Amino acid sequence: MDLKFSLCLVVLLGTCLAQKIRYDGFSVLRVVPKTEKELFALKKILDNNRQFEIDVWRFAGVVGKHADIQVSPKYFLQLNQTLAENGLSPKVTVRDVQKLIAEQELKNHEVKETAGVFEYGKYHTLDEVNNWIDNITKYYPNITTVFEITKSYEGRTIRGIRISTGEGNSKPSFFIEGGIHSREWISPATVLYMAGQMLDRYSADQRIKQLVDSFNWFILPVFNVDGYEYTWTKNRNWRKTRSKHGLCTGVDPNRNWDYEWCKEGASKDPCSDMYCGPKAFSEVEVKGVADFIMKNSKMMKGFIDFHSFSQLWMSPWGYTTKLPPDFKDQDKGSELAVEALEKVFGTKYQHGSIANTIYVASGSSADWTYGAAKIKYSYGVELRDTGKYGFLLPPDQIIPSGKETLEALIALGNFVVNN
Ligand SMILES: *[C@@H]1O[C@H](CO)[C@@H](O)[C@H](O)[C@H]1NC(C)=O
Ligand SMILES: *[C@@H]1O[C@H](CO)[C@@H](O)[C@H](O)[C@H]1NC(C)=O
Ligand SMILES: *[C@@H]1O[C@H](CO)[C@@H](O)[C@H](O)[C@H]1NC(C)=O
Ligand SMILES: [Zn+2]
Image 1: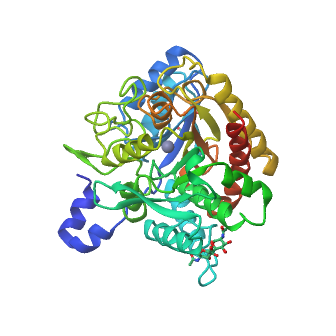
Image 2: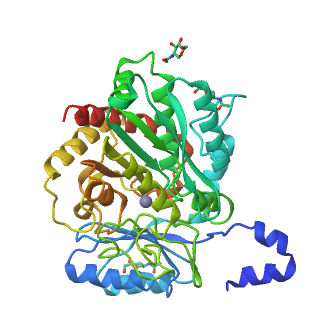
């Protein structure tokens, strides 16, 4: 047990439980494996994550693509040296993680809010997201309804909104999810912004109207509700669900889907951040969303799972670098999306298959929605940034991220409808 934690247990249980984990002096190192040998060495170091108190911000999987590794000050020199010995030339991308956490928190507090008006340019707690769901569905009762997936491991309800105009029954559907990895805060924030715009601008903007009218939309802003709450109250860096597995907590909800489950790019170690779970769909949250999608899958034509960070628009497969038969069409959708996105502020995204663009990952959402639920246009998207702030993106980037991603969605929506 952590010394600080055991000390405060003795002193005062109450304050101790309220205390958030701090990351003073933690840094993030970036390395780029240039050969298969270096990649292999890097993976071995990352697998030994407990030895160096490592938290992987971005995994390594492909030669020539970088990994970002958070390390405690205690192990910095040792890790730096180990990486250097393996030819990996580490560079520091974040000097003090706690400083970025504090900055994000402070700036979020400083965002001015008008009474009774939802502020999209701000990160919101789970309670605030739920209030947003209640408010917006009351505000647009003709075309929105609340949908409930299931209760999470800790008993929170997973909720989203359905937007449906006109003859709902005869239209294709599109499912959008945010916040499957709880620390990736820009994901729920971007999803909320886009959903808000789709509703607020529906009658005034022809392009938005066309996008909204083309599908029945299922929008789930926060998938991993327990993890998300935990990032606000206990540990800003939490990624997984909160289910218990021996001494360790949480399953990676994006390695838990029942399609090529727990092969390459997933871990059987319950303490790993990529733990695939004791079995496929072990997580009630993942099983719940999968069942919901399957129930509606006949009409489901599009699916996007929003993550951060890295600025990538990706399609299946994740479990193998081999390309699926539909890859050309799928990647055409990505290409149109990132072109439209870049036009807004010049933000550059790369696109391609998951395994070839970021790393091999098995049991991920997009592989299942494509492979099992047969949703051809299934995507995994990594939002801003490319690593300067990582998960700790300042709130003044929320609306820009929302604006550019909405343009990508309009371009992709048009493409899917016409295919
Ligand atoms: C970390 O390793 C790099 C590459 O060997 C080296 O240039 C740098 O000085 C090291 N940093 C520290 C603080 O030791
Ligand atoms: C409720 O939704 C409307 C429509 O989007 C919005 O104008 C308003 O600011 C929202 N109010 C709150 C308190 O969220
Ligand atoms: C919502 O319903 C009301 C009452 O039936 C109608 O006047 C209004 O045009 C509808 N709005 C939309 C956006 O369909
Ligand atoms: Zn993620």
